[in-house]
Image (cartoon, rainbow, N blue to C red; front, side, top):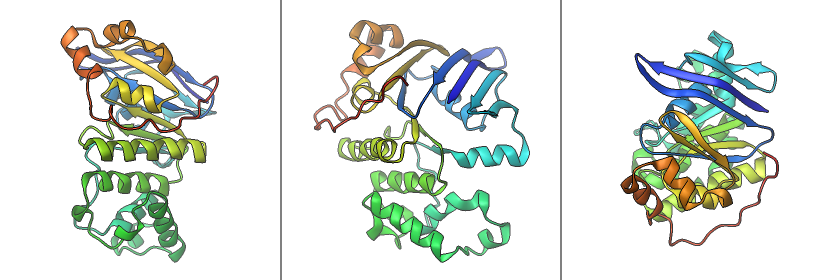
Length: 270
């Protein structure tokens, strides 16, 4: 279970996340929506310990994440994998080596320096790439792949960590509609097949409605909506996005609106 209690992050006089409370009782796919500056990315970065909370608490099962330091914090970061908008791959390195970077937290510095990995890890990396439909690109440089393919490599690297939670910060913001669909379907399938918790910051309402079991809306650092996609009405969306032009932009985006909706298995009582 993930429990976030009164979580707050201040940058000087600015409050990025303001007394946030979230409880997730079982693995789910959760979408976080809101306009730019709402605090979505800061929230995910605190979950992954990339940003330290000003106050409040994050607890996962019996582990108090906000109290972790040193090796214990690094171990948590391997259990709480992060996927970024800009992929964060090593462009000139081959795809399979980028995926194997997901094992860095459990590898020695020497083996990492010389790019030495057990055969079992290499085989696992290729299996994960195959699962994501890009195994044939394993020997290519990451920079030779399309944006959607690179994002799937980033997802493969996250899976290589064997995480309990996957955090995705605007994973499709820079992708075309077809690649956006493939990436979101991949994340959804990982949740359903592996039983992993997936929390994704998303920039369109239709994406959140289509792929998520639960949607959290943030505005000015605070949660203003927490419910199912079916409860995300036009009125609620206006509360989340505020000004009409911001809501209109989010609601009328056609980035993946015209694509077929994939099957979604609801998760009850998340």
